[in-house]
Amino acid sequence: MNSTDFSIESIAEHSIEQLDVWTTPLFVTQMPDHEFLKDDLMALIYQQKAQQQTAIDSLVAPSAKHALHESQLDFLDQQDATLMETKRQLEELILEVASGLNQAHWPEDAQADAHIIESWYHVTSKGGYHDAHSHPNCSWCGIYYLDPGDAAQSNVGGVNRFYDPRINAEHYADPGTAYLGQHGVWDFTPVEGQIVLFPSYLKHSALPYFGDKDRVVIAFNSIIELY
Image (cartoon, rainbow, N blue to C red; front, side, top):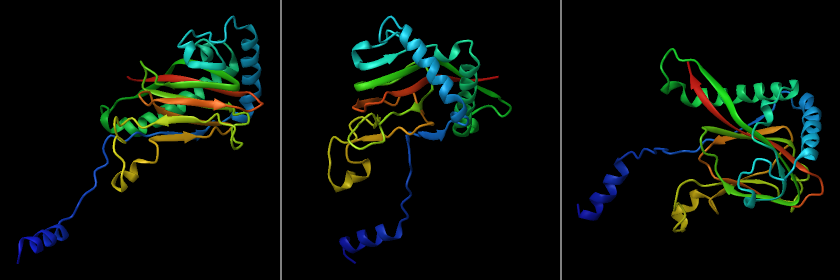
């Protein structure tokens, strides 16, 4: 047996195990009571939008945002029955996701709560966008598509783009790296009533939107606490 034959036989005899490490889970679900909440939420958002002193009331990175209105970061903390119920339902969904991923790593008798610590609305008009960013000082983030406007139409834009967190994952492209994806991004087209939940470190953006109808979302940041 020559050296070449030995090499070929050795490879054939060995089992190769795939290890998926450093995965980035995202979750998509439907807001349970969207049909009952939407009209009141939309009315509250437009009422507050009309009272804003500046387009970006949060004062967070205004230069990264164009043709959109953003509230302060306590939108769901107001003493309003619809907002309180919206926050409750969102926290239940966050806790379900966090528990499913982490419970095996928690103390055996631990109980957990999800707390939304920041929340705000975006009302995006034609030409609006939000540059790439991530959300510090929290663990799970989400976007609730209250009214995606015309985003479902082709060539209108307004999708949320999530960026591959593996630095330099595409520094070289050949057939061996095809599994990484074509451009290192994942685009999510807004669907009314849907919620996308994602880890806070994941960079994302709202691509330019060219619909005639406003694109309205509620975004939020959360933490998980054990007791």
